Length: 164
Image (cartoon, rainbow, N blue to C red; front, side, top):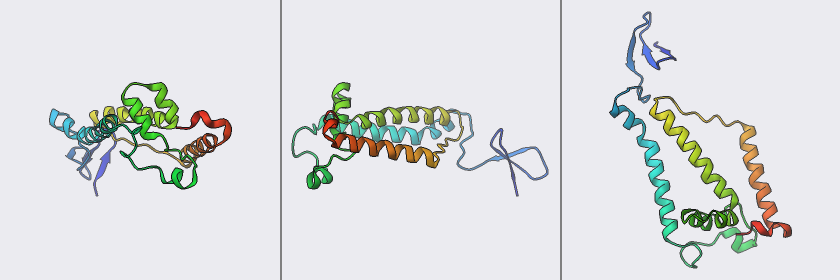
């Protein structure tokens, strides 16, 4: 059985302190090819997100017929936490932050959190370090509670300012 030296993330042979071969999938090389290989997945994710935002920026969700209506809103009249998200993204792409916040404030918060986490991911990947987001139950319940409070408040009479 091989031991792993946590400092260098290289596999050592049993009974020796000499590094062996790189563990597959860690991408611990330092050359430009290794760095580009480690940045391929974050780059692909960014390309997909930019493509989605470009599409929403080009196809106005304020015009009827371009996107489906939220089923919860259509059948119950209740705004879900995602209602207004496309309009928010459209306004965000066009630089209208006030309209984006009015359409869906939680979505704008999500865009900013995504940007921060993506930046953290790229920096860690470029340095060859693993990326771990250890979200515990407290974090997940907090996000769920935030979305629940947002949903309830935007559907109450005094929460009309949160309607998309």
